[in-house]
Image (cartoon, rainbow, N blue to C red; front, side, top):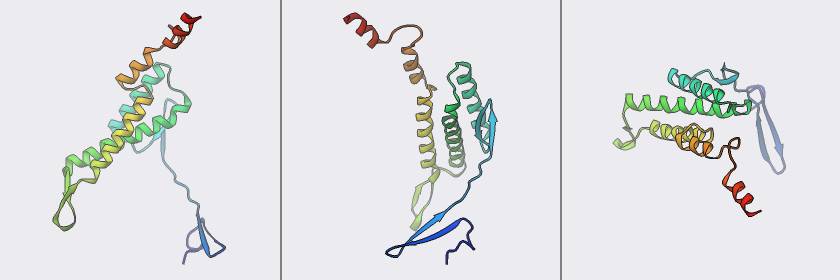
Length: 157
């Protein structure tokens, strides 16, 4: 039987007609490290830590990193770490593993690596860390010249 005595933070509430609502309160404590005022996960492998430090240095140097970007940097660091760890596991154990009924199935880390890579690419693109996204961001520089839309509007007036 579930009760608050056995599980602190658990509260049962019975509604009408006989619906049971379970409220679970818990706290997840994640160790964080700080690098140049950006909080990062503490569990990063050395390669992911070096990479995210380079990213933060690059963005700070180009004056493109704000406090609001901390979440994206955190996600990028975690995703890149997962990608590296999944690939290490695949290298150690192979691309396939034994499945049910003597079948061979893809290693579960293949999916983890694929998902983590997609997440990394999406975040990197959004933060202007890929060649293509940097080209797009530099194509219209608001400080140097007008955008094509502004130029068109000026020419029609």
